[in-house]
Image (cartoon, rainbow, N blue to C red; front, side, top):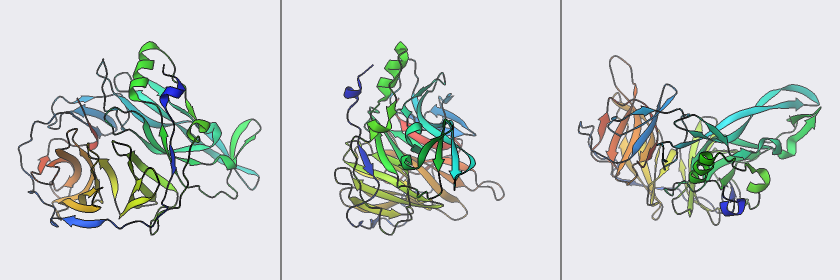
Length: 371
């Protein structure tokens, strides 16, 4: 197993900006581009990972060679290994913490840790040990988008100042609790290291609070944002220079693009969510439920690729680039019999043209990975 030093430095970026955000510039063709759905599905490399009724599947974009996995509907590794397995990241409850308010016991809450899950066996490997140190993992973690799954992007909230031990039980005092802002964290474990350790039966040293707090960068929250402490869908660009996350508050979402070196916000995109980096790192495709759009990092311009069509194609979400960047798969609710709108996977070129309904392929796309 690689030593902790070989795993590299953990980088922590505390959410927000040190300069006022630049409103993303609108661009594109204004009508969504492309056609309104063809029938010919191109032969494209890679596998689309998607979820149906709680079961995670892998298969070709045309819905051929589909096979179920024993992994949860979370982020899969881009790499597959000798047996064909992939390693899926999963944030799972591992225990409970007692909640006290005004000196009185109130209830128990669950505490979570990060695991890697084998898609073929369902075996789980714990990667973090945050609970005892007061770090709360938010609900998603993603492998690096560098093609090699070199590290893990996740978001934590640090409640350590409110933690104490009561009668030998880990507890939290919520009397004067103020939710801290999320901390964007890079966990220095790769899918290759997970698989190698698994193959030889070695345990991976779990990453602790001290490991991830070796370096941090504190800045202020985005102006005019609904963000009040919770970040989701954190990803770095393939070259690690630019980051993106979804600032989440109740039912509101905003997309924040930032410079990794300084923490300064490059763009703030109201209502944006579901970000996915293009393989070359030049663009981010995202949804706002009414459109699928892209953000160009160099120019700061957004371009609408596909818009909703009332009573035909609504609630567009979860766009994912193909491994080569030529295509984008996404989900949308499509008009069916009566007043039903089942969610179905859609396909288009990365410029928004040649839109194809994958009408026989229902399910929420999670990631488009290499074969």
